[in-house]
Length: 242
Length: 247
Image 1 (cartoon, each protein chain N blue to C red):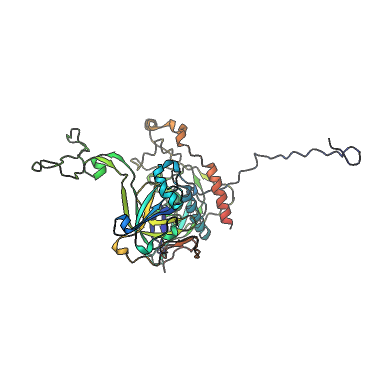
Image 2 (image 1 turned 120 degrees about the horizontal axis):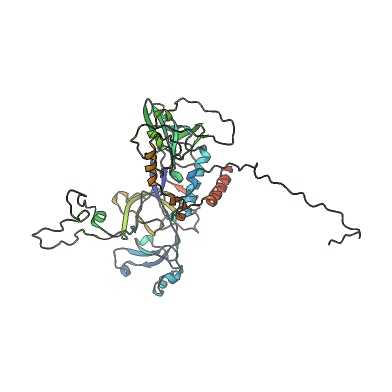
């Protein structure tokens, strides 16, 4: 994570996400997938074929791509279908866009009720016998049962969570890095799924993104760094207020 | 044995004269590397530090960040939207340099009209217009937070102080002043060995100083897992910096 300054001198914290060997693996039409839209399977980081079972190698051989560590699905409309085997780059996103980032949160193991659910526990002194971090009462008398979903100790973390509506500040096309506002779930160097935001406020926010995706062998030559309009670029002189 | 073309014995070649490198008088070139360039130990990808360094070098090309250590007296002018001149000048002694990469900070302390003021500035913030080093002197410690509990005379610096001219461009003088403290309680127990402070004149009784040594951890200096040898990393970064800044 890094700080980033705007032209008015405000500081924002930014997470760097690297797009590492992403390829489209398979296209599933609406009927095959069984959903409301067509699906595209996309694979992430390259990994050695020995770490995947033989049955999983089929998809990668079909697409002609080395085996990937993670395979995710994206729901796509019919005009955004991409041929399996095309590489995906960070330039697929543009600065100023809004993005949802999904990842597995940091696993904390088996945790008690105070850390997992934020319960207040009991006082440290004044006569408490062996009860300082316990949940206390778990149900009422009349219920005669514990309701489903009662918050109790258990394994915490290591589940998929999404941060919605994160702004993309900057894109580095040379190293395929996306600078995303704020924090993102997951530990350092974990695999993350980045998707166009589905929040209603940002529905019309994408101003001419590369559609269906950015093709590297195409005609357009992008500069090494793409900045949002409001970012203070370090090539400019210091900020002054008129 | 060389055979000469004429048949005469070859001309006597005297052996090469030995070159004496006088290592004692040859001083090491003082190369200062700002501490925020050295990446911390961790599991982050070195690519992240490389990209951050590129940004830091970019900023340094446009704006001059002078070399300074803890104990120097600096004057910083920032752009302030709420001031009448839209700019704000603060003079103070640098008591701490923290943070790595673009978020590197330094704290300046001064006592203005009997009120101690500390301001934490970010080195790479675009709102900073100028950083001038007024007085160059290192102190015995790298963290002068104990000045908060010292007598205010040690933290007062004239706001309109002029730049102290530097005679040599070689060594930075070390000020070995032993600071006198206010009566206890202090914000931190500075007499304890964990802070390892050499710049305070402790006027505490002997038994208190001895009791403070109870918290010493003499095994820490031999702990091999805490060793972080930065010499090779520093060399690489210095080379990179010098190449980029010359462009």
